[in-house]
Image 1 (cartoon, rainbow, N blue to C red):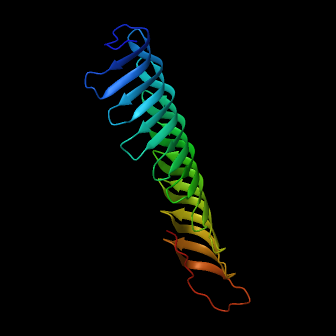
Image 2 (tube, rainbow, N blue to C red):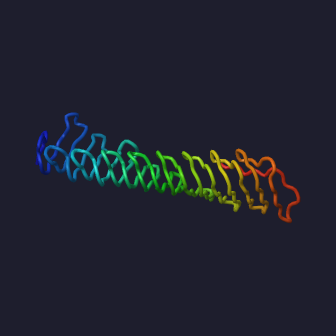
Image 3 (cartoon, rainbow, N blue to C red):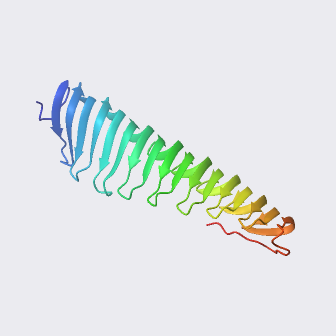
Length: 219
């Protein structure tokens, strides 16, 4: 087994880098890591999987010891998480989906540390595009997102049975929308920053005879 500087070595070997932080065991081709191998780091982190022409490239498994046992299994390009993969964090967060050079980007499914789930589109690690989210309090949202904020058209089913369908901005009711409250009251019209505005239509069940400015806040 090779245990010195590889130079133009081809075959299986082990190499400790001059800074002693990295150690590689695996296949070589003409002095470069190529094929299956494992790259160890002094802090306990490591990568195990495919190498091509000296770079981490293809399918593999990455483990970060210093960030609370974070791990990733999936595709890599030029040493970065790139393509489809699954990431687990010690907090309980789990993401399965597309990555683009280290960031969640494309379609994916995220379970956060509180057990809330999101499935849909991501951009630069943020919910962005169309997606749906299930909150731990029973609320369920499906619609547009912009950089982690509800934006555009969306429908929220609240845990108490109420429902809002309409326009959103910055995760608040903004624009035209309709609220069907669990009590049976229906409010349809213009909303601004989560509150009804101007000329709106109010429908009342036989249980109610007067209702003004019903507002359902959304966090």
